[in-house]
Image (cartoon, rainbow, N blue to C red; front, side, top):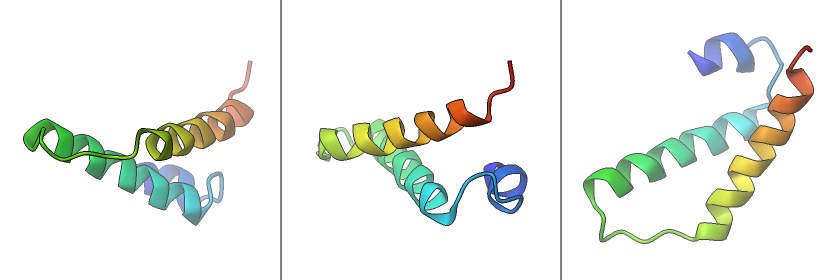
Length: 60
């Protein structure tokens, strides 16, 4: 749904879409395979970039 409403409309770019997919995959793998390790800084950077972009789209 994210891709349909935000990527295809151009509000988020393809790089952001790929980062969101990667973060979702990391979360799912962590749920089912806790022995898998991730680079914490990589996940934090991707999430931070997404949040910064999302903040620009919020209408107050």
